[in-house]
Amino acid sequence: MTDIPKAGVIGNPISHSLSPKLHNYWLRRYDLAGSYTALQVAEEDLETTIRSLPGQGFIGANVTLPHKVSVLQLADHITDRATLIGAANTLTFKEDGRIFADNTDGYGFIANLKQGAPGWNPKSGPAAILGAGGAARAIIVALADAGVPEILLSNRTRPKAEALRAEFGARIKVVDWVQAGPMLADAHIVINTTSLGMKGAQEFKVPLDDLQSQTVVTDIVYTPLRTPFLIAAEAIGCKTVDGLGMLLHQGVPGFERWFGMRPEVDDNTRQAVLA
Image 1: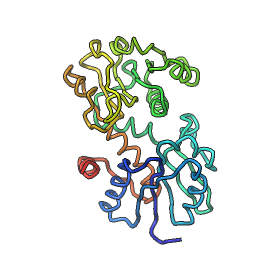
Image 2: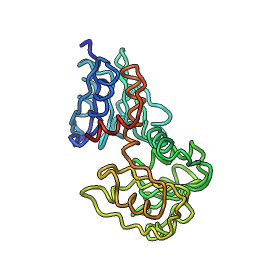
Image 3: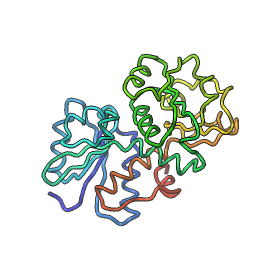
Image 4: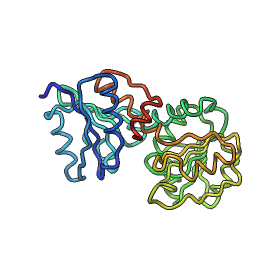
């Protein structure tokens, strides 16, 4: 085993990932020995690749699409949080070869909000979520843990939202996609977890006429950094939080576990990743 600890991010495709920029910046900033690389891995090669990593000097890995669910089958220990979400994004390889799986997406989401909208109080009122995919699952768990009293959930295909309500309980109220605009009137925070408005994806068309100026608005999309949804919400007077911070903060627990230093997410970190 090599002396320099290695970590990386596993996905398919992976060239778009900002995680190598982030972790290598932190390694330089804190003058730590280590490396972090992007690993493009097809579904059929996932198990072989992951089991081979510890022998190559890897102490851990982040996991992104489409492997976040599949990696749970390979883990020897799964945190309660990852079990509840049904996906993992952070793996740690123990010296005895065991694989430890966690999900830090919800942590990253809440930490980003605390930094970007420190005035937001989770207990103050309902949260409205657009979308019912994997990111929504992590965010629902995080919001419930934070004490949000009600979650209004709307998805283009209603059965996916209904499935999340069946799984996570009565705190979730499912709203038809055609009513997604009016749903925003009661929300103290609105979260877009869909790809709508993302570079290369369909445009964001949910009407914002009912959005209140005191509502906090966040988008987990970060390409572009200021999405059409955030720009429109800013025009209404809302406090907005971009999606880059979620990516930066979700990387903190893994980096600390692997390299022994808890990194800071600040303006320098953002600039290094955006450069």
